[in-house]
Each structure stands twice: as structure tokens, then as C-alpha cells.
Image 1 (cartoon, rainbow, N blue to C red):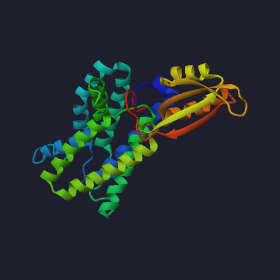
Image 2 (cartoon, helix red, strand yellow):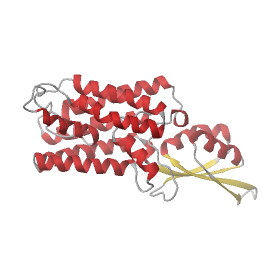
Image 3 (cartoon, helix red, strand yellow):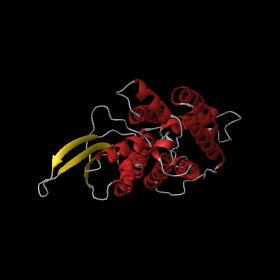
Image 4 (cartoon, rainbow, N blue to C red):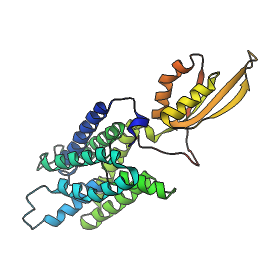
Length: 293
């Protein structure tokens, strides 16, 4: 998510554009489908929705203050991320948070759901949120909130991940929804979050790990490329070809599917005669760094 130098071949302008489009799509899903449907998003967006209920009966009730609350909630997160992760990634995250806060406040919220069927509205809202979040990760952006907390916590506690932190926050949000409103609101909100996560998994290839076996005579060149360009390690074995009897090298590396696509485009230039076998890893144990981008 945060390392623009390591994880992308696109220009900064392209990534910036992708993040802007992603923010618009995400906020359209929130303001046009989730809120009119009486549903609640996960993460800090859902928390800002719940906190906005405190404005009922006050002078602030006629105004949409969710975006402002979202921005305020993220201020300490940006400060935390700045101290732990550095200033450069937090500047980009801060811009995205500011943009999404403005869009949540300025985009009109229909008085009635655009789609009358509650389940369809829920699925479409989750679909928009998922596309927006997935594109944001592709553009190496972050909406702050649980993303930053998850990365910071996972660096300190190995058993924690971004997904686990996000799940813990969402459990609290939906538990409050069930208590304050009714179980039906919580259930539909969970369905929207589930649809969103499915779309994110389809778009964001960093969530899927693959094992790459490369048979080559340019083992050092390929190993160095893997190390220098996607910051992964590799192991080199020596073998003998059955037909040729010639010595061959086997380079084995575990990486995300997104990183593999980068390697696939570079491999013909590194060794046109290389043979690669790639398969999805059902589980990766040990010291393997999962990245959002």
C-alpha cells in the first residue's frame, strides 16, 4: 500500500489519479446506497456514521457531519503512522482521507434508496465500496483507519494482521448496530461488508500468494531481480536435466500474485529460455511479509 518505489511500475501521477477515482467510487457507494438503505459501513466510516447519531436533536442534525467526523477520527491515526511508517506514505494517505471526507460531506444523499429492494441495494453498495477500496490499494493509497492501525500493530505483534484488526473493529461496529437498531440492520450491513471484501480480493492481487519455480541458467540474474525489484527472497537449487543431462538451476520464490505478474513480464528479458511453474499457495507459514501493495 505504502511503498511506491518498491511496488509499482506506474508513474506517481497515474497512481494519484487511480486513488482519486477510487475515493469517488467508494464515497458513491456510501452516500448513494449504504446510508439511504439505513446500513452501516465497517471501519472508521461506520464509526463516523454511528457518532453522527449524537447530533440528533441538536443544531447539527440537518447537516451531514459524517465526513468531518471521519477526518477527525483519522487525525491521530495519521500522527501514529507518521511516527512509525514515515512521512511520505502518510502524506498520500492524508490526501485520500481529506478527499474522502470532503466527498462524504458534499455528495448528496438520496432521501430514499435508489434501489428499492433492500438486499439488492446492500449488494450494490458493497460492490461500490469494494471497487473503491480495491482500486485505492492498486494505486498505492490508503484510507487511513484500520489500514494504518493494522500495519503498525502487525509490526509490533507478529500474530496481528491488517485483516484481523479490521475484523475486530467491524465486530464492534456491527454489534453496536444490532444493539442500537435491530439485528436486521446489522445483518444487512455485514452482507454489504462481505460483498465488499469479495470484490477487494478479486481486484487486489496482493492478497493471494503464489510459489514460483523457475528452471534457468541465469539463476543469479533472476534472483537478484527478485530481490531488487520486488524485495522478496529466493532459494536456488542445482539439478540435472533428464533429456540433456546438463546442469540446470532452480529458483524458488514465494510472492504475491501481483508481484508475480511483474516477474512474468521481466522474465523473457532475464532469460528467454527459462521455464517457470507457478501455483497458488493455499497457506504460507513463517516469516513471509504480506503487503497491501
